[in-house]
Length: 307
Image (cartoon, rainbow, N blue to C red; front, side, top):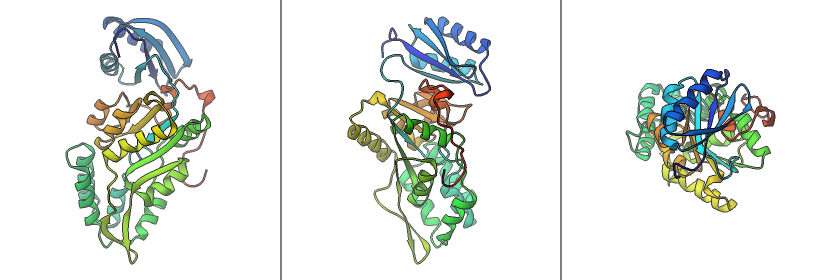
């Protein structure tokens, strides 16, 4: 996008924006050579748009995030559709608070060892497929009932998850949960939150115990990206009408392929690759990013089980 093209700079704070926040942002954009032509507080005091010309998106985002650490900043083109018609979301540490494989490992007494591998994979330090197979192999022999117990006792939905999905579906968007985790978790969790579809790996079970293997092909970063593109093409959408959210290195190709890729309380590599990063708020930040005030949201409690 040319520097002369308009930008929408959205400042978001669940605790409430102050005039100082807006003034700081305007002054910083002016210092970058930008011209703030309008200020639109579309959901006061939580969300305000600044319409800007003459500034580069990446530079504006970097400066504003550094100057406003208590505010979420979304910088996006001022042209094209802002409200998205397709959302793809990661599951672990994005739509739920936990990493499911780490919680399963806890039932086998291996949480510390498995969680260390998970962290390195999410940081982009390990090949995802190899790391997944190694972790699954370590769980061979675990009673498959641990999956049920994990779902019942460990899993918590991320704040704002249900409201985000319910609102987008009410506006006609398609929603897809795509995970490098397991269908044994994405199936129930997608149902609890309200996703239209879920895609994940098949965890093999034999005689009531985990076999230590996973179905092929593995749902990795390439599959996540391919799923977004296939869903987009099936719906006949442009790239700009798509939204993706995730937190780890495995989500980067999906975030980059989306019209708006948002990193959610993410690892550094994912945050850097995304168009925007949620650092402060919950998942409803994605609604404000689309210019949707709370009056347009479908409120939904983020508990476990059927809505």
